[in-house]
Length: 286
Image 1 (cartoon, rainbow, N blue to C red):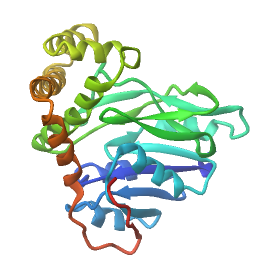
Image 2: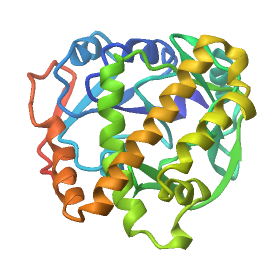
Image 3: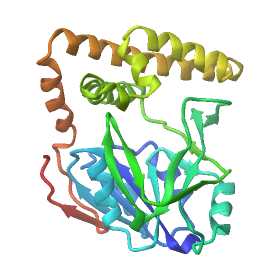
Image 4: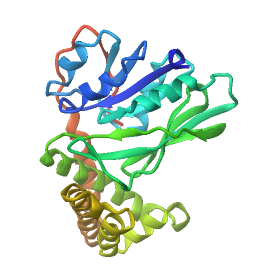
């Protein structure tokens, strides 16, 4: 089934990661990349891979960015990937053995989180519906991220994708702050029935960081991963603290989240020259 699958990747300044992702996609006949005007070496790396088609699009929302990428796909199946994902060899083999004639329209794929290249025992990453029929799926926004809406039957595979982000810690902090801005808007405007248990814990502001620490180290056995397990737990607690701080700020000053929301769209305002396999889409931020 591999020849019926097109990987789709979103990028913005992913030079520390993108090559590992592309190397795990050597089986693909074509790879679609939607780039938000990267200013590092991402585009130069992508240009070295003739199977990669790069489409430049100004970032507005995750859902619209993904849906634009889906529109560029010409095969029946899509494999949606972040730029810091790396497919295991077992997953490639398992996808090859899947039948495109099956009644299944999407597959959930489990993840293993890596810290500096080494997989951890257990993390907060749930399986993701990453392999699906293009005709049966579309993305919708959900807080700082997106949800895939599939009109059809879902199943799951056993083999994993490795989440292996090697970007600098400062970039991670920058991203968490932007995610928190979007998540705050969701937490303050959604009705109770629209929120998960995790969302309701986050609304308590001070409870979520403590719960995440216990969950990562004890329930997910991160304490047995040595310093990498502690590093991961520290990252997750820090992300929750950033969200709590933004939530307190927005609750005390209702106008704050409007100002912060404007800042999110500023990240991709600089365009760069295009390599030969890059296409430009003049899509204004809405």
